[in-house]
Length: 292
Length: 319
Ligand SMILES: [Zn+2]
View 1 (cartoon, chains in turn yellow, red):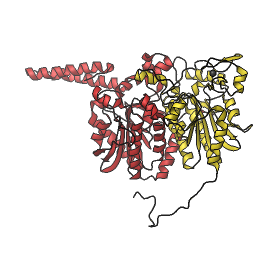
View 2 (cartoon, rainbow over the protein chains, first blue to last red):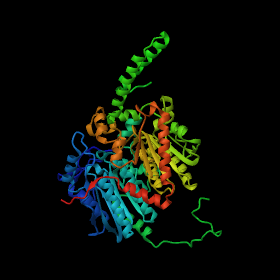
View 3 (cartoon, chains in turn orange, cyan):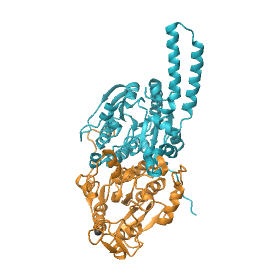
View 4 (cartoon, chains in turn yellow, orange):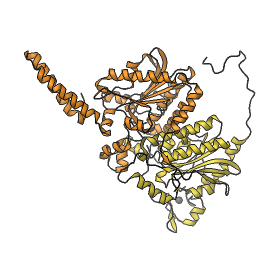
């Protein structure tokens, strides 16, 4: 399963200036935040903090967070070089959040939505029991209020420290989408850099519309795992959003500045009253649920 | 016979017993007392070894080259198997077999990962590591079961979905996700049996069921012990520790409520007595299919949601 042990370097500007990872331009940090974390010179999309993502996508003051208190319970008492418990505590301190996803209600240009936003700074945005549960409860809300669901993914995949229970979150979250699907409520899946492993191979790939930010790394296996398997270096741009668009895996690549307008367009489409053709019962009176 | 490190002393004893037996036959010697003593010692030793396997030893047994594979169970537990190889989208993926069969005279659909027995077979089977088209073939055949209202039985045995370039290009992640969701919707009972390695997402793509069973020495994990060791210990040789930490044995999974039951293997593992193992698998399948028989499509759907929704451990303490 894809996994990022560590970000190459912290993208949070502790200094006045931030160096672009792509074109190496030094950018005044305040300007970068103001430009929604997109390099003014080369349009490289930096990872974006959850609060800035909320501001970018949602109508002012529409965000109402849900289930922020849910956290992991270390079901395996997992211990590697450091204990899972310690790693979680560190992540909580670093992010000031209890888990790797923030979930809540909000609106996009007036359209009410249920929203989940992954936080990569919290253990690589990995999905364990708490993340799975928060996604399911968010879906409960979407169903209760009959709202579309939007999840902004940014994750290395399943959280190893919870073993097979993390793996089962793939089923749990995919089934949440199955429930929405049955109720004909739309699920918009926005993939950001990076989205890999058990997150990609579950709910994130089940969007009625799958959008991605430019340059986002999206895949099942992480590039290093693939390189080790095939013993070759991957070509430039492999597993990037633009490549996935060409291979037909995702629907669209949308620059950050156009995201809100694009999502609103989609929500308008899905929110319009449905066109219902008259249902005609079989003329022979047969039971439509019969096997033949 | 290929041996595992912890089996060495048992095989030595077996060899000695065989030697004594042929010696006594060839020279008309009565060595029965010596043979009896050694046989008792062997049985005792076996019991000690196999009832105290470490998770890493279990992992090795789960991957044992002589362990019965999907097609072996199809052969031993089913009749009139007809393999359907068409996924309709891409050249066939031989790491997954799918088809129609009779189980105790009832028509069913069987799907499973298929590993190889030797290098040549393994190359043909891609070591049981499917590409997206394998999962899509599995889904096509499972939908056939749905259409004709036949129960589905899946056998899980894979190191994982294949992490290669073509697999990514053709949407490996989507194929897995799609199977998970579509299996949830299927209107017929699904019984899953983890027979060897339940390797991560590649296993889950055939692993959503109303009953999930597991052989005693099979494993099921989010990542291989070696993979976990190289990431969290930064040292692949720590696989033994990782195997322990990951809680990947059938007993662990039962405790974590991820599987519904485990099927005991003959002493020493399924490969030592495939026939008995298959009989136990068959009766577990029969029992579970019977239990699911009366449920409506809606009941199956709701029960699947409840089953997986309960999985996971988290805290809601406000402090
Ligand atoms: Zn730049």
